[in-house]
Every structure is written in C-alpha cells, then in structure tokens.
Amino acid sequence: MSLENFDFDLIVIGAGYGGFDAAKHAAESGLRVAIVESREMGGTCVNRGCVPSKALLAASGKVRDLANSSHLLGFGIHSSPVRFERQKIADHANNLVQTIRGNLTKSLERAGVTILRGMGRLEGFQKVGLRESNGIDRIITAKDVMLATGSDPFVPPGIEIDGRTVFTSDAAVNLEWLPRWIAIIGSGYIGLEFADIYTALGCEVTMIEALDRLMPTFDPDITKIASRNLIEGRDIDSRAGVLASKVVAGCPVKIDLADMNSREVVDTLEVDAVLVATGRTPCSSGLNLDSVGVKMMKGFIPIDDRMRVISNGQPLQNLWAVGDVTGKLMLAHTAAAQGTIAVENILGNQKLIDYRSIPAATFTHPEISSVGLTELDAKNLATEEEFDLGVVRSYFKANSKALAELNSDGLMKLLFRKDTGEVLGAHIYGLHAADLIQEVANAIARRMNVVSLSCEVHTHPTLSEVVEVAYKQAAQQVKKKS
Image 1 (cartoon, rainbow, N blue to C red):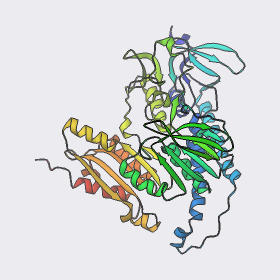
Image 2: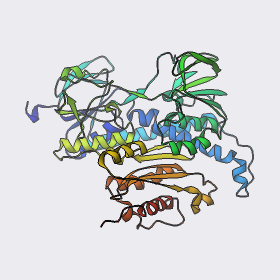
Image 3: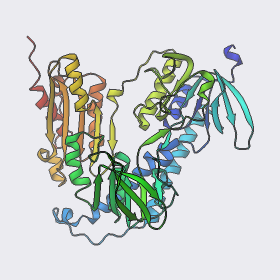
Image 4: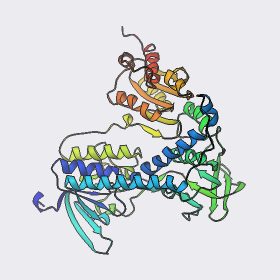
C-alpha cells in the first residue's frame, strides 16, 4: 500500500498524556494524524489522576497549614478554628479537570489532529478498527499505529467495589463525601497522597500494607523520616504485613485482615469507607494484539527503547506503544516522553529513552521525590562494574530557607560513583522535594559528575542549597585521577 492510500500517516489509540504528546508532536511535524479515544480526552492523568488529585492536595494542604496552630505560633501567628466546604474543594478539582481537558482538546485541534471518538483496536498491520458509540464499526488505515491506552486501578481478588463505600482513586478524586474513618489499602504514592488529603480534612485513617514495611517502594532512609511525619505524626493507624483478604462494601465496610505468610485471618475491621490503592493494571485486553502476533507480558505490551512493539524478540515495523500500557515507569511525564520519542523515530530520527533520568514525585506535605537508581540497584551495579559506590546525605535542618519556614525535617540522599563522580540517583524528602529533584534529573540525563556540579553556584537562601551541599560532600569523596 502506497503512502497516499493510507487514511492517515499515524493513528494513536488513546488520548492520555502519552497519546496526546505523540499526536500533537506528529501533527506539528507535518504528519496526518488521528487520535482515538473512547472516554474523556486527557486520559487518567487529566481526569482521574494527577490533575484532580493535585487540586485536592493543594486545597487540603492549605487547610492543614491553617489548622496547625503550634506551627503558626512559631511565627507569632494566632489562628482561629478552620472551616472549609467539602463541595467547593471538590468543585475546585473538577473545574481544573475541565479546564485542562478543554485546553488539551483545543491544542490537538489547532495542530490539525483528527479526533475520533470510539473504541480502537488493531485489525492487522497498519489497520485500526473503530467502534463508535452509535455501534458503527469501521476500519481505518495508517502507515504507523501507536498504542497509548494507559491503565486502570488494580483491584485485588476478594475486594468488592461499589464506588461509594469501597472505591479506587478514580472515584476518590471526586471527593463526594468525607468518611469519619477510612481504610486505605496500599502505602505507595497513591495511598500516601490520599492519606494526606483525608487526614487534613479531619478523617481518621487506617493504612493497610501487605508487605512487611510501610512505603515499601521508597528508599529505606527516606521511608524512615517520611513515615515519622506523614504517618506516625498524623491520625493514622498503620498495619503492615497483613493482607486485606476480603472487603465487603456496605455500612459499615467489613475488612478481613490476613497474615501475609499464613493467609489466616488475624483481625476484622469495620470502617466507614475503603480506598483501594494497590497499583494499576494495563488497559490492553481489547486491543486485539493477537492479530499482529504480539504476546503481552502480564497484560503489558513489550517495547524496545525506541518504543517499537516487540514480537518474538524482534521489533515490529510501524507499530508503537507508549505510556502505562507498556509497564515502564507508570508516570504521566514518562508517557509524554515516550510519545515524543516514538514520533521522532517515526520521522526517521533515531532516538532512545533514558529511564534513569526520569524523576518521580509524591505530593504529600512535605513531598517525596526520587530519580535514577535505588541504593540497592546502585550497589549491584557497583559490584557488576567494579567501582566504589558513594552515598552522602544532606539535611534540611542545616538549610536557612527551610529553617525560616519552620519546616526543616527533611533529607536528601545522593548516590554516585567514587571513581568518575557520575551521579547515579537521588532520593529526597522535604519541603518542595518535587521541584528539587529536577536539578538532579538534569544532571543524570547529561551523565554529569559531582566534581563539576559542586562548582555550580546556587541562590542563597534557597532550598536548592540542600542539593549543592550534597554535591560538595560527594565531590570530596571522588578519587583523584593519577
């Protein structure tokens, strides 16, 4: 089939951040582009994830600050009892979603992207089946096809979801009510952020974690200081090493807690509501990947570092996948980066993705962030490549800006090679950690070393000096070249 006979140069299935960035970049690069979406434009991030949850965190964070009378007294400020309106906080999140969704849709239209509403699937190579909401089904062709269908919340077996008393983050962002007592299953970033919201708004929280320690995906040193503030220092009862083996929706919600090892029920809770925050699962079942011979890996679509879909160990021509459905770093900005890189490769520009330099953040108060390798992975790399691993810690309690804010309980851990000084990773807990991590992410992307970084001047007094101190400490440990 010649290029002129295709309906489009590129069809993108899924209009989340990955699909959006890919479609917009492709259209602005001169390609004829269509994007297929069956739900709201913007995907999970805009409608059920990043955007509404950050709006709720912003509002509840202000409530927390105003209600923290002992903290305010440190400035000589006397506060009155704080009042808030739940519905107006929910409206703030919803209004933001509508604004961002509208802006995203308009930007695609301005770029010349054709928006097709319906369920998309593969119908062989370079063919997409589209089932519209009115039941009409048709086949569209394109030189290249990109899969960007995202993910949905994962609900473990034994948990009954009713959307009202037992729900996932999809429903939680609507903030339809404030339970007096809510159990949150999972202590990853989603569970932590909603625990932050609910406790700020006066709810009692029980956090349930199946693994033997809370916050299992975070650096252990960061977990130690963060859990002391974000969990132990708040109205949160935590349970680790137990599995929510059965959850029955209702009033009250009944939860059976089982020992993670023996699976025997050790306790039963009755709470007002349950938020299930146990991770996410890819939206790939309806894509008809069998039609192109692709076997999924636990539901995820295998890809290489150019975003080409893999079949039998080899990349397929003209088929790409980006975002959560690929099972890489399941973050909106990762999906966006993947989408842009995929288009660059479609255009003939050989581009690879560097997952090590992509940062992640948890928007609690204070925040948690990370980039690069974990300490365990860095130790394994050091053993494999036979170099000495350097680890330094920089504390917010020595930072003038943090002290001025009366918010100096924070830590940065920096990982680096002692032979070359190359930055391998960083983990931060503290005021504006989500912003601070970008400086380290940029350094990792450029494979910079701590010796040169230690010479860069940081503004005083700012929180960025926490990073500067870490660089200078690390530079002192780098071996002198003979």
